[in-house]
Length: 321
Image 1 (cartoon, rainbow, N blue to C red):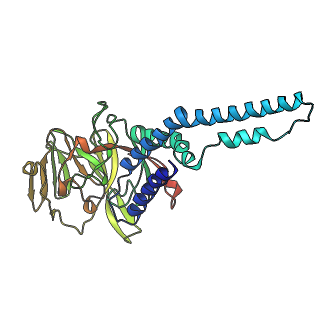
Image 2 (image 1 turned 90 degrees about the vertical axis):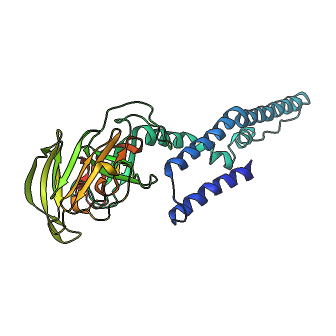
């Protein structure tokens, strides 16, 4: 077993290393699931087989020491007072290969349950959600609001509530489901979403947008048009770049592409059943549903709701819309 365990641990370390150096495309959910299963099997084996064996060996050791002491006493010879207790502790101690598997199982399964069914952390890698979320924000995503899902497979277990317009949602990027994206829900099933000349209309009703003082982006060292928009009952801020045209270049072929009409003014899309239309708050710097299409329900990961850390700006910590 020590050799087998060493091989298993080496495989996990090798996979993590190859992922870190971008030699393979990693899947943390799958890695965590496998770690839970493997350490769980070792934990069961420890409880049902290895620990009872060590306890029996310790009991036999103690019985032999007691018998030897009684024999010496009968002969009138002083007993050999060896440290039986320390010998028992050495017999009962977990070997390294169980310490690194069964010993880690309680921690790993706690992380697995927390991450799979309650809350999952993410780091914002790009500026597509500025000004709501900045590069480097560490956020938490609620995994149960939209219904519990099986880890790895992402199959829905419970219904939960449906995503609402204005929600900030994490989902699996439709062209490449191994990647997680974060955008705002703009259109729900059945909506007709129009984004023409940088004005958003849903089901023929213009979305309320109030002009705010221009937003200064320190990364680009320039100002952007700044608006406050209300989607459903949620209010949030967004940016527009007046130097970018309304035309949407580089549109991909995607499922239900026929539901969208593109022009020099922008796009009009009818959201199909079981799908959502997503847009970034940094409207002219966001690769979103205007380019690659609708997000199917099966790709939903959860609702983002909290910035729990930003090491460059602690004032960012808190909830957001």
